Structures are given as structure tokens and as C-alpha cells.
Image (cartoon, helix red, strand yellow):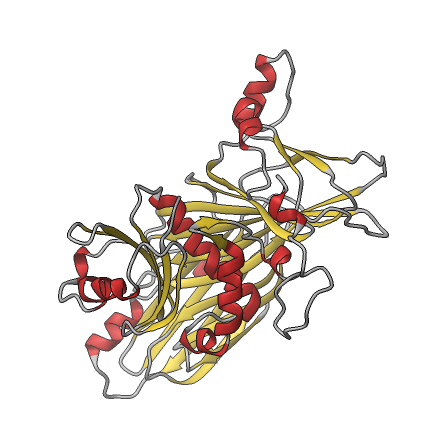
Length: 440
């Protein structure tokens, strides 16, 4: 990848920050981007990549909040690498400024120029880890004692970690966090089911440790079997795997072993996705009955978790008509309240154990005059559910081992936790009472 220049523009196309790294493009070249992208009449055909043949340049851009990040190149560069670098810039800016938008760019332009100079040299990416950058570029402008020397990590093969890291206790924490996205039709059919997971790691290890992580990945099991090994238990098919740069990809491709030297502190080691049919952890049956001056709601929730699993902080948002008054609720478990700002009933259950059922009944009064179209549209909004289940993964993913090896030979304590949380979890309602036993 070779980038000639980087521009940060506001939503109107005005240049906030510009850095010309190679001097082979004029500084006003960005006007071509403004006219063809920002001021374009038809934005339906705009892509992240724009080639301007008459100028001999290619623009690669991303949009974040109310700013554009634009890279310009004259070379036959790797466009995917450049766009990845732009996203990395946003990540570093977020670590420094929390919120990245036009105002924060204006307020921190001095540090942004310093970051650009450290992160790219003559159009080639250099240091991209904010933990390393923070040691040499500080927001309070204090000069670091080692600022006169080049960071060791910049010239080291392990650019994400400094040498000589020391901790009094050597520990590593691994959190397996899965988010489940569900869409259920009003007839009870599962329309969409997806699991999105990530492995978050907190590393407090001295020296330059080597870590090896084993999962019950099906391809890893097959690789072990091909080498004469054995495996027992359930395996999972991981899709769309994305690793932190510390993972040795060649090693993973050969034998599916996740081997790496971790950054110090917290980072996302890996993310994955499973597009598979799963049993919804919390199932909702909900129906409404419309009358002239009243509407009745009956909602039943039941858990479909494994034994001993517990869903915590469950919130069920049941949409209601915007003009209802005089709410009244009765719950077999938890508490329900009317949230007029959301046009919904919020049913909260602090804990919901596996195999349990709960029912919420509610009714509202309606004004004698109402808009039928608005009422009909309001009943079509789905129920949404929020929850978290500790010590549980819905995909069945398990950490088989997590080994720490360091040349000094210290003993490290690895800790592994699991958690399932709700993502885009929607269940559509039925608009009239069916003959269901649980309604009696």
C-alpha cells in the first residue's frame, strides 16, 4: 500500500486536516473528490473507491459521523489495505478523543498531525497501535523521556507490544461474548437466526509471552485427527473469522492453532459469526385484543435455556398504541410499567431461570376518537427483548485450552468466562386472541 496524501473533510467538503506524505499530488486535488462525491447529484452510485483518469489519481474514502477520511494515491496500491488503514485511524482517534466528529477534529488538530506523522511515513503505514502511540504522543503535551529515540516496537516484528513489560501478578483473562440476533414471525416461525461472537482478552503478562488457544472448532478437530490425535465432544463451524494482528495467520491456516504474542492490556483477539438455526433463548407469545374504548394485552415469556442457566436483567418491550391512557398491569413475575416516551410497556425480570414461564396481562383505555391507520401501524411493531446469560454460549463454543509460555518460566493464571447477550431480538405480535390454553 502507498498513499500519497490523507485528507479529513467536514460534511460540506471543507478540509479540516491534510497531510501530503509523498508530494506527488497537488494539495487542491481534493476538490475533485468534493465535486464527484460530496457534491454529487446522484449519490446512489457512489462507492468507497473513485478513479479520476484525467488526474491519474485514485480516491479511497470512508465516512464516520459528520466527517470524511480520504486517501489519495497515484500508485497501483492495495485499496483494501488503504481503507483498513482509514478505519484504523478512526479507532486510534476514538482511543484518544472518545467521540470522533468535526468538533473533536478541530479541537485536537495538533495531536492528529502528530499521530499521522507517526502512523504513516512517506505513504507507508507504521505504528498503528494506540497503546504504543500513547507512550510518545500525549494529550497534555509533556515530553516523554524516551521521545528522542525511536520506539522499539516500531522496528520490532511485534509492533503491538513493548519489550520489558513487567507485572507483579501474571494473569490473562479471556471473555467469550456471543450476541444472538433473532426475528420471529407473528405465526411463530423463525425468520432469521444469527450468532455474532467475539473473544475479548485482558493480558497482564510480563516479558514477551507466547500464548496458544484451542477451541472446539470443527476444522481444528479435523486437523488434529489428520495428525493422529483424538477429540471428543461437540464441535462448531465458525464463519467470517477475523483476528487481531498479533495472531500468526500462517500457523492458523496450517493446523488451526491460534498462536500469538498478546498486546498488553485489553484487546479483541477474535470475532466470528454463525448463520445457523438456534432455539431462541427467550420465547415470547403475545396477543392483543382491540375494542372500542379499550385494548388488552397478554404476554407470555418462557426460557428455553439449558438447565441451571439463568437470564439476568431481562427487559421485554411490548409496543402499545400512542394514545392509550389509564394503564393497568398484572404480572406473575417481575414488574411492568408504561413508558410513554417509547410507546411501549417495559416488562422487567431481574432473573429468569431455565424452564420457567411468566405471564404479563395489561389493559389500557382508549379515547373514543382515534386514527385507525395509526393504531393499525402501532400494532405491527415487534416486541424487542434484552437479556444476558452468564457462563453460557448458545453456539456451544468452548475454550479447550489456553497455554502461556514465557522464557523466564513464570506460572500464569488464565481465566475464561462466557456470556450470551441479546442483539437484534424481535418477535412480531398477533393482532387477535387465539385459542391458547395459557390465556385461560
